[in-house]
Length: 153
Length: 189
Image (cartoon, rainbow over all chains, first blue to last red; front, top):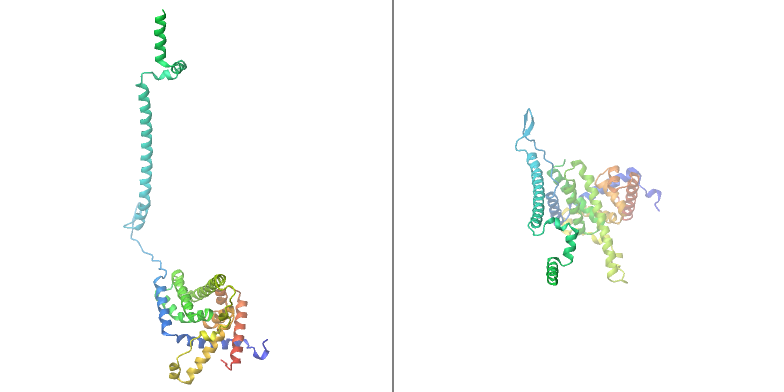
């Protein structure tokens, strides 16, 4: 436990602290050369990765009755930079949709052409009697039946 | 905004002091150099565009955080080392650690060049550094920031993430402990 006479008053404590700091500062100046070299290298490395300052550039702007237009400005190219891919994307999507539509129409046309050029008219497929005729053997069966009836006569 | 030259000047001004502070804390030159380098890089990389007046406080805070990180890593590493090797063996060498042994003795030739006064200052410095190394971490931080870095109580409290009252308490205890220890060795500053 500290005795009262051992304790420093605030002024003495400050003086002690400042004297200590002065002594420590002297000591830190006498570092070995190898340490100083490594600290120098570390400082250079730190400075090489220093955060870059923001640089503000004034752009030449032409004032016209319709508004302002800046020549050679980056903003125009920046705008083009994201508008152009967007336009290409939209036109690409329209082209794909168009191609799919044409393809679908061609498929339907092929089916229609096949139906119309067939021996059996398309309406026959909707006739329930014709479907029954097909199930019962079709043309071959009916022709054999007719020939047998002729012989019996 | 601090220019590159201002940042360079600031770093060259504080680098040796920062190194010594790190050595007092971690007691290893190589580790202290790594800590200071990390702190300088972090300052330049993240806060290089801050006004020059803000750099001391920011750098002090970064340095202290780096020192704390080092202790955390050491703790984790020691845990794994203890688990995987020498389960029943005690690390006697750590218990017998003497801070005096970690301090390099000045060259004799250098001492004799400037005579008895330099010898006295050198011994005084060695004794002071030894006692500073023995201080509890928070007391040492408060003492060094207040008197060596010359930070105000408010800035020290910000850097240490504690109240101003705590800074005063830590600083006072550190000063009393150092004065008492030095007095026992017959030294008065």
